[in-house]
Length: 246
Length: 223
Image (cartoon, rainbow over all chains, first blue to last red; front, side):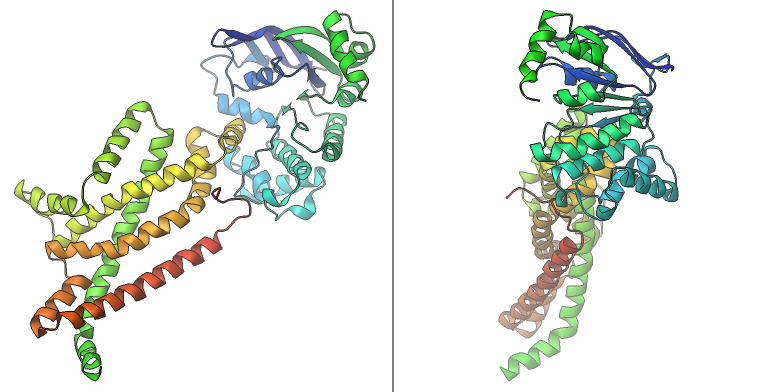
């Protein structure tokens, strides 16, 4: 499998506060990477640095071998290639479900209306929401909104998808439907980076896991090894806090 | 009563022509007001610091001076400088830019009430800032602005009456002229008042129809 994303020595500061310190990792096509760590560890910032929602201070981000962390990069093209799923969904309030999912193909990719509709319908079907196609976001539950926001990201036909704590804003009984869509996605060969507190998902679905603490990657590796035999004290301590909850 | 009705019918053609001028003038002012107001509102939220200050100065200047002064300034003041405008054009410009600053404030409020996540989501998909404003922010702001904007539109409809001061033959002027010719001011003004009430009623009706037509669940200003 070819490497799709390579991150080298990424750093990010907010004022004097170093939130990412020399972060490096790589991701192969079709892999799912889970980023775990406590709140405020820098996980979400890492995700936002990758698509420049929060531009990094230094380091390289190689997407299919091309460094996108340069002033010459057309960041809008890069963003279209990296789908982003938000914690609080952020579906467009004024558009129906179908229009939300058609938005990327139509307004960003500038594909024809027919093509956009075709792709959107297919992606809405993938997340199992065809019956809600004419509803507005406010008429859906949080779980349904998040599934649609996954469909919206998929409709751009991205090279990878970034998930920023996709289940954290949901009531516990609604996380299942979203995780199940994400699991199907992982199995279908989509490349994804998932910042999450769902250790069950990270352990069973992700191929690789990164444990990040205070802006530093403490440990990374295949999820099986990281969960069953963590090497570092801090990783052990973090995982121990979760072990009782599963 | 019969005498009043006979008189009302007698002056009806003049009043109708005045009402028609009022409607035309209002449509021009309201259109200018909304288009400028939208642009100014967007500029106040999204543009550079420099543009922000220019727009703010413009808004504060126009909000801080009476509309009649602005009209005299454009009609007589510019006339002094050799720029001679027809009364109706001067009134259209003066009232249009006057109402635009109020519309701008309503637009600014509407834009700022939209959750920041809407903009972020559009940008994260690879849309540029102006694309996001056009396809995500403005369609929402336009819906949110309708209730407050409607008030301003109704207000402007009546406020076109100050165009009387520069000799535009609108509704109030016609009431004044017919009143003076027949020495029946009271009845002339009464007929004019009736016309305004009817017109405002229909404008309010149209606005509420538009509001219902573009309604989207979950999209309204926080009460």
